[in-house]
Length: 178
Image (tube, rainbow, N blue to C red; front, top):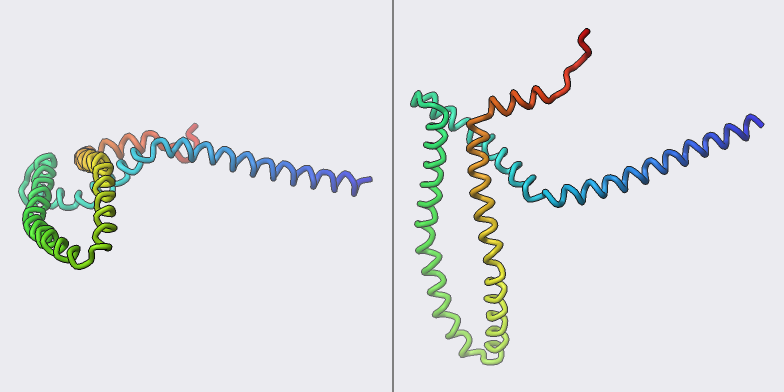
C-alpha cells in the first residue's frame, strides 16, 4: 500500500511539473506578444543606449581637453559626426548619380538588342517602381527612428549619472537591515 501511495505521489508531482511547464510556456507566449507591441520602442532605446555607450568616451575626451561642460562637448561631437556624415553623402552622391545616368544610357541600348527581353524587363521595372513608392513611407519611418535614436542617445550621455542613481534606487538592497 505504501508503494502505491508513493507511486501516485510521484505521478502527481510529474503532473504538477508538466502543468507548470505548460502554463509557463503559455504565459511566455502572451508576454512575447505583449513585448512585440513595443518592439520598435525597445529597439530604439537599445540602439540609443549603444550609441551613447560608444560616443560617451569621445564626449568625455572633448570635455577634458576643452574644459567645456558635458553638454557643449556632446554638441561638438554630434555636430562633428553630422558634418562627417553630410560630407560623405555629398562626396558619394555625385558618383552615385553619374552611375545612374550611365545606367540610364546603357539600358536602352541593351534593350534594343533584345526585344523580347525588353518587354519582360520593362514590366519588371514598372513593378519595381511601384514597390519603391510603397517603400517610401518605410524610409520616412527609418529617418524618424534615426532622429529619435540620436536625440535619446544625446540625453543618455548627458544624464548618465542621474539615470544610474535612479536605477540604483530601484534595485533591491542586498541583505536585510534591522
